[in-house]
Image (cartoon, rainbow, N blue to C red; front, top):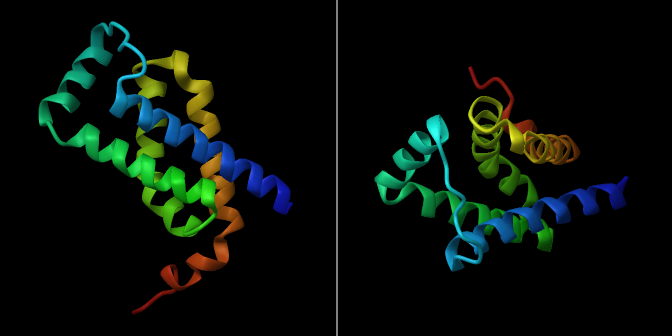
Length: 126
């Protein structure tokens, strides 16, 4: 099971690192968006800081996944972004749903494999 975890962690890391570096270095032209997806994307870009922050977070977490350090922390940090990725592809751009589901399932798998690290977060403190 350790090999499966390493493969899943590495694939997820490569996906996040490649996606963030492609954004920062403009490796690919942006596709022409239409409809609600265009409105959503324009809103993110209008903030001026949100997309670079998300991509920087993806880059840092992706590096953590590839290197294998701070993986439990990276899973916690990246999970809100993963939920947003799945939500966007569920409601606005269903053509990207298979990759979004891969990212979600891999993140959940890594969270499950590191569940011992989260026990102190989940105890009732009251």
